[in-house]
Image (tube, rainbow, N blue to C red; front, side):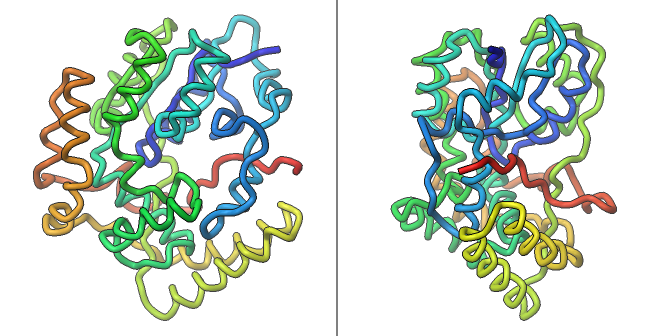
Length: 329
C-alpha cells in the first residue's frame, strides 16, 4: 500500500494550505485530497477532549493506517506522493513516528516570523469564534495553562514558533539533505522561485509552477457585542457537537461562523509595542535556529517594515479553511 514520499511538516499559518494547493498542479506530484490528515500526530485514536472546538477537530484525524494509505490510492503510476500537516514539525513524537515509518521521506518546512505567525494563529481562532481572549499578548500569557489542560497544538501560539528546538530535534533523526527549510516570505515575494526550489528538492521538473493561490486568508471580526454573542454560540455549539454525528455538528456551527466572519476586516498589523512584548518568547530560540540552519533570522527581533500574510481582504465567496475530514470513531 502507498505511503508518502514527502511531507510539508510546518509551520501552521505559514502558507502550507496555499503550498498544498500549488503543488497539486504539478503533473509529477500527487497530494492527498485531504489537507492535514494528521496521521503521525498520534499512535492510535486522537484525544476526545481539549480546548474550545478541539473535540470536533480530533474527529477529523485520519489515524488508522489503512485509511491514511487510502488517501494516495488515486495517484497515477510514478507520481511522488505527499501530504501537508503543519503540526509535524512542532510535535517531536510525530517526527519520530515519521522516521520510523518513512525514514527516507523528504520534509518541507516553511518558517514565518514567529510573532507574525502567532498573531495570524490567534486571529484565525478569534475569527472562528473559539478564542475567548480578545488580545494576543494576554492569550500568549494564558498558553501554559492551556497546554497543561490539554488544549490542542493550534492553541500553542508561542510554542509553535520555536523552530530552532523543532529543527534541532528533526536533524537528529533525518539527514540535513532530506529537509528543505525556507521562509514564508519567499512564497509571497518570489513564488515562482520558491516553487522551483521545492520542485528541485523533490527531483521533479522545474518551471511548471509559478503562482501560489490565496488560500486560508483570515478575516478579523471586530470585538464587541456581536462578536461576544456569536462566539458564545459557536463555543456552545462546539460543546454540543461532541455528542452529535460529525456532519450534524458542522451544520450546527458553520452558519454561525460564516455570519461572524461576514463583516470581518483584513487582519490588522501588530504595533511595535505588541511585538516587543512577544519577542522574548522567541529570542533564545531564534539564536538556536540561526545555529542550526546557518542562516540569519535577526530581522525577527526588530520592528517589521510590513505586516500580514497572503495578503489583504479575503477573496469574495471564500471562507476560512477547515482542513481535515471527519472519520468514524
